[in-house]
Amino acid sequence: MGYLWGKNSEPRTWLQFADDAAVISNNDKNAQVLLDLFTAFCSWADMKIRVDKCYAFGMRKENSNYVQYKPLLFVNGSLIPQIECKCDFKYLGKLFNFDMNTDSIKAQLKIKLQSLLSKVTQAKLKPQTKLKVLKLAIISRLSFDLKTYDLGTTWVSAELDLLIREHIRNWLELPISTCVDEVMRLSSSKCGMDITSLKDYYTILHIGKRHSLKNSSNSDIQALWKSTIHANIETEEILCNHTSVNSAIKSTKNSFQVKALEHIRGLQLQGASITSVIDNMPTKSITDWSKITTQLPSLMFKFARKAIMNQLATNANLKRWGKSNNDNCPLCHVSQTNKHVLNNCSAEAALDRYKVRHDAILHIMGPWLLNMVKAGAKLFMDIPGYNSPSVIFHNLRPDIAVTLNNRITILELTVCHEINILQSRKFKQDKYKNISRDLKPDFEHMQVEIHSLEVTSLGFVSNINAFCKATLNVNSLVDSILESITKTTIGNSYNIYKNRNSDN
Image (cartoon, rainbow, N blue to C red):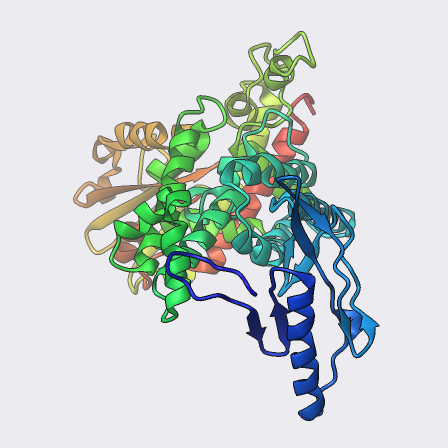
C-alpha cells in the first residue's frame, strides 16, 4: 500500500492538507480500504465528504508499459468522478497528468496572459497606465504558476515575454524593429520602463523556492531539495555564492540590469540617446523624468518614448525601414534624422521653433528666480520683461546673470539633443571663458562665475546646484519648476516634430 519515495523512505499512503486529503495506493482494493477508513472517521467526526469535489486518477502497468486507467472507487456508495485518459487534474492548485509534463499549463498560461493583455489593450487607458497595470497587476497574477511549475527560462522568454513585447509595441505604437525587451527591463533611473520580464521574474521566484526547500524544517522537504539539485544547478550556484536569499535575489536583479544596459549600449542607433543621458545626467534627473512623463497626455508620452529610442518616423528612419526612398529634410535638404528634426535643422521655420522652446524654459524660471534670489542680488535675463544682460556686457548675451556683492554669476541655457549633452556643455564653457573681457566699465571690477544648464530636447534637466547655492535661497531646482521645464520642453519638441516638414 502507498508508494516509496527517496532512499530508505517509509511508505506513504496518505497526504493531508487542511481539509484536503490524498489517498495513494498500489491498487484499487487497497485504495478502497483506506477510503472506507477515512469515511468511517469522517462519519464519527460529523464531517461531510463532498464526492462531487473528489476525483480518482490511476496508472498501472500493462504489457511492461504504464498506462492511465479510470479507478472504480466509492465513498458512501457514490462513485468518485474519474479523470478521463489524457486529461489533467488539479490538486492544491497544481495541474497533474499522466505524461508528467507541463504542456497543459503552458497552453493555459499563454491563453491567460493573452486574455489579460487583450483586456488592457481594449481598455480606454493611457499607454503609461497600461504599462502600470502590466507591472503591478498582470505579472503578479502569473506568480503562482511561474513559481510552481518547471517551465524553463527559454520557454518563458520565447512565449510569454514575446506576448508582452507585442502588446507594448501596440500600446506605444513602436516599429517592429524597436528593441522593447531591454528598455522595458531597465530601471526608471536608466530611462527604462522598470518592468521585470517574466523570464527574470521566473528566475527570481525559483531562487526563493529552492531556498525554502533547502532550509525547510521538514526532513522530507529537505530530501526533495537534495534529490532535485541536479535539475537546478544554476539556481543552486546562485544561492551558494551568497550568504542570504535576499542577497542572492538582489545580486540576480542587478545582473539583469547590467545585461540589459550592456545590450542598450551596444545599439548604435536605438541606444545612443539613452547611453548619453545615463552618462551625463544626474540619476535624480532621469528618475524624475520617468515619473513626470507618466503624467503626460498619451501622444506626448508615446512621442517621448519613441524619441529616446530614436524610433520617430523621420525621413531617415522611414528610408531605413523601407518605407521611403528619400531621407532628406524637405526644408534644408540634408538627412532628416531624429537629431536633425529636434535640434539641427537650419531652416528659418525650424530655428524659430527652437527659439520658442528655449525661451519657454526661461519664462518658467524667471518668476521663480525673482522670488528666490538672495537679498541684495539683481537678476538679468535675456527675455522680454526682465533686466537685459546687455546692461552688463558689450556683445555677449548670457541667458541669465545674477549680480551679488562683487560677483556676477552666469547661467547659460542650452536646449540640446540627448547625444550632445557633453559637447554642448563644453561649447558654452569655451564660448564664455573670456567673458570678463566683455564687461562694461561699471562692472569691470566684478568677478565672473560661469555655470551652464543643459535641458535636452526630451526634457532631461542637468544639475545647477552650484548656481543655486551661489545666488538663490535654495540649493537646487524645486520639483515643481523641474516638472514644468520637462513638460514644456517635451510639448515644444513634439510640436517641432509634428511640423518638421512645414515651413510655416
